[in-house]
Length: 380
Length: 78
Image (cartoon, rainbow over all chains, first blue to last red; front, side, top):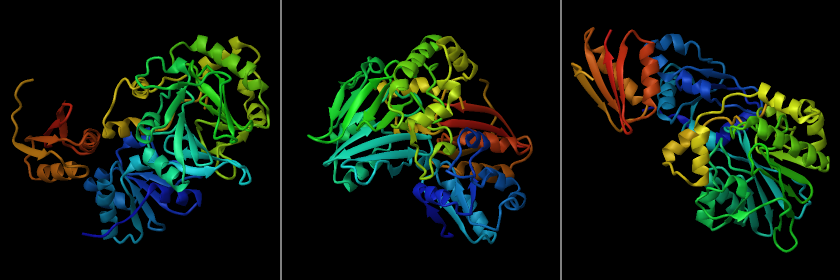
């Protein structure tokens, strides 16, 4: 048996961020590949050849793989990548490695990045999930950690808390997520944290939570940063944005760096479009333009800044999205939303039920449901 | 469904990819044209993989029975 090198999703992300020169060979079937593929901050040299194609015409497909650079192979789990890696190695390729654990490990991976100044007395982290194109957050002060919109990768958050010598005490949701399985309930159960949400989205929830409604304020510790809730309905009726230390707007799926969160997921597009329009023109419009927007999602890595973080001054966000922020009436806004509307993935209904606790799924099914990029933006 | 006359059976229960495809290929290669192979797999990923792979050969899947915990493929050798 040949020894095959492997790499973790974190290794892969740093190679992608460093613009290392390599070929990413995805050996899953074409359907799975077209549904979801690995994306990074920069262009990826990626090639899809299903592992079973090598079975039929080994030489033809081997000749398609570059011998000029290292080949990193990914598949659904790990077995097929290993199979193809052995073929390549046997054919004289000298730098071949495989993704440990398969594509789901990439889908669940989180990249932590410090957002606020080192001189601040608290720490604000963004956790980028490249596989979902989503972001969760942590605010840390004096050993206490508040999480916002955590994903299912609770192992990561627990390790992060340990490294920080902190305790996760509270978990906030910006809204009832439809595009990924929330980790809030799992974390709350494991570390004894309290969950804070807006009741509009969680009326049917079968777990206990504290209400976070418009104007509610929570301070971390006695003299730590304040988190203030503003009710920003539209994407959902219970969407809340959190302002941290009067400086950062953690907006969930209300405002993105490009675009806003689609208001059609609830099935009442014209009604919710009007609600979103009012949120944008009556609430977001009046916030300090120097505040940094920290979104729940991105559509493309071009939205990241030079430090590869998703953070942009609110004034710039408004300026860069005239198709949204310069629309003059709620009717025109609804029209814009409807013109850009697309079908929502069927699985979203099930994810909502999981996130309210109405159904539970096994780990393997959760992995499968949770894999794939979000479709939450009103326009792309 | 009418009873299908099966010439060979392959049990891939408990195996993950690529093994269901590799074992199926090995058996099909030794079968005679027109014969039918029944293959059982518990790997959910094999549904798309086996279907996509067979469609690239001259062989034919003429039935898949999809149960909650297993898949049964009936494949006709070309």
